[in-house]
Amino acid sequence: MAVGRQLEDCRALAGQRGWRVVEEYVDQDLSAYSGKTRPEYKRLLSDLGSGDLDAVVVWHVDRLHRQPRELEEFLDVWDAAGLTDLATVTGPIDLATHDGRFTARILGAVSKKESDDKSRRVRRKHQEIAAAGRVSGGGSRPFGYEPGGLLLRPDEAAVIRDCARRVLGGDSLRAVCADLTVRKVPTVSGGQWKTQTLRRVLLSGRISGQRDHYGRIVGPAVWPAIITPAETERLRAKLTDPARRTNKSARRYLLARLLRCGLCGATLVARPRADGTRRYVCATGPNFSGCGKITIVADSLEALVVESVLYRFDSPELAATLDGQQQTDAQGVEWQREAERAQGQLEELARAHGEELIGLQEWLAARTPIEQRLQTARRKLAGLNRNAALAEYIGDGSKLRSDWPELTLTRQAAIVTAVLDHVIVNPGRQGLNRLDPSRVTPVWRG
Image 1 (cartoon, rainbow, N blue to C red):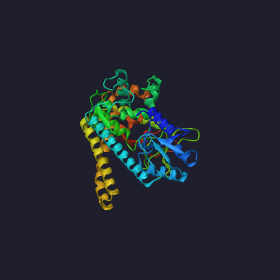
Image 2 (image 1 turned 30 degrees about the vertical axis):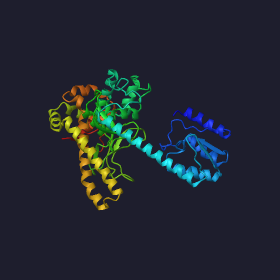
Image 3 (image 1 turned 120 degrees about the horizontal axis):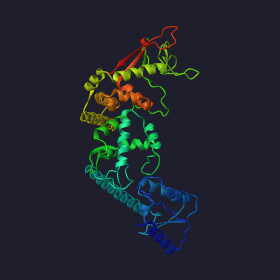
Image 4 (image 1 turned 45 degrees about the vertical axis):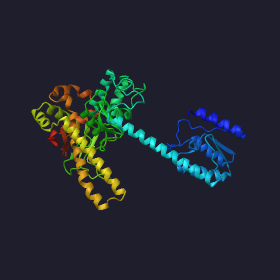
């Protein structure tokens, strides 16, 4: 029943009782069953506790509560205030008597069961809709689709394909959002793109013609796809990878985490001079395990490594390596499914241990092989994502050389990492003020 009609009934009942209405408390669109904070209900309790009210009129007792704990809280406040008059439009409830309170508790329990049953039916209905791949209805228009979500909007679909290609190729979400802003591509609401908005779109199964349900893909959908299911699997693997770079400061060093000290094997870190000259150093001291004996200027080293990468793109060795590493889309999908299966098993195992169905030793013994499978699946997916960074340029090294100056630093780093495992930096010769190429030993993937 509409709130307005309930208010009218309550006012009429108060008039019949000869009570003057001094305040009305309405939590519009907030169910007592939801568990969410109801500001007006809290205000009612406060006013009861302060002695501002002598009686309460409600349309039905379940308008006050549908959770037993809320009824007990209400009764505590009611008793402390010394009140006895509670009137309901749908029937008398006398909270001053044990029988009346018993009735209120029973009504509350019945209402909660009705709400639980309704919620269960709604969840089951949504599961059926999801399993059939249909639209559940409601909400705003999905980006890339017309209202209703069943027909593509071609210009937006092209934007999604471009964003997916760039992110799989190594561009950051921030860089892609910045480009969309420059191009004046709005979101569905007409605003600017933010990283979390773009991430949500690219993680959705919808854009590959699949149906999501509580974050999991449950099957094919009735609407057309914009990208392939395999691309969605790779996007999910990339954007949910725990090792993914998440700090928001701009990348300034192309070879971060790729350089190794030729003396002690430690990873070189970025550490500029006081005048701002960019350098990589083998750091020593607190939080570092290096020997402190290797330092190299970043600009000249990065130029040498980039030239080596571009040269390798023109070589037959790279083409042979990529052919050997090539995996099909179906394999990528299977690795993602394996990762999801392993993650689900870990969650089930944790629940079983938490419910004391298995002991600690059983939990530890079962966890190890599952974690190994999960790590293997993630490594395989990481390999697919590395190759995705190269897809546009495989067999066309001249295009990469031409495009290189215009690529973002994040995209450049993804391409370098896809073909280069690491670089060993050896000590320099004393008195030599320029980079000696013999100091640098690249270790190529494959």
